Image (cartoon, rainbow, N blue to C red; front, side, top):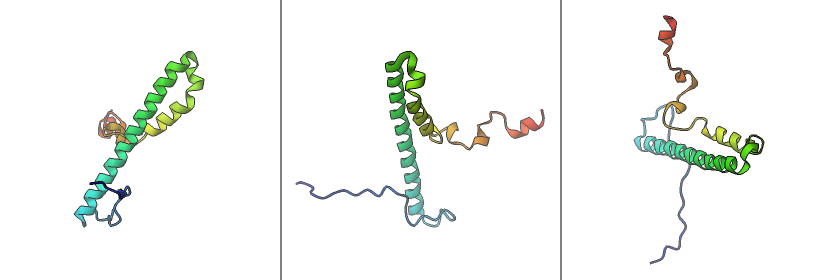
Length: 106
């Protein structure tokens, strides 16, 4: 048996998802969550590929890597902003190690 058709993937967010009321349609909510996770993984894997290119460029260029690898490093740094599952994915105000309440008492 041979499949002669073409598989189509829906790579966008679900059409019927309402951000104002996300729990109105549970199926659309789960599809939207899967979409966000998929996009997050694409960003992570893109950053990994660019990191390998930066490593290769540093090894190839040696002492001239600051000039020769500048554009690849910029692409890598831009791709790492806002991705990840931990602290880096939080908003900028949450990166501070000391909570705001502790600073008020200092």
